Length: 154
Image (tube, rainbow, N blue to C red; front, top):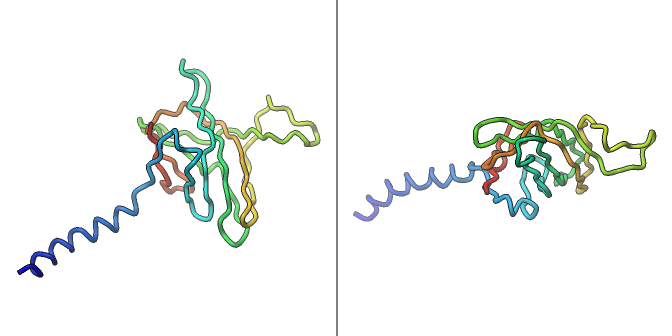
């Protein structure tokens, strides 16, 4: 009798456990800098999320640290990083700001730089700051390479 009851119950529970792994990781905004997000061969950590000006002016920005966890070199495409706000407005990477000043001609932080793909060697990591196309409103969904990788909540 017990065996007859267990079979239907297990047949309902096992698919629920399998689909639970497909859910995106929920990360509190206060824990972003402590939490790594796996996206393909990369481990992405959002070290700073500026949600935009409270008066409705200004753009948001995101500072990411990207680590290559694979055994070969991989290319990180910042244009494939996107946030979707609670009202389903998508924010894309607009421009990049680099913190390295040793360039020729001299780097001017007031001039926006188009975000380029970055080749990352195995085990190495980079840290970049990108402006977004609008203001971030939480909860937001984070996508990389057309895949939902995390949900950012208050």
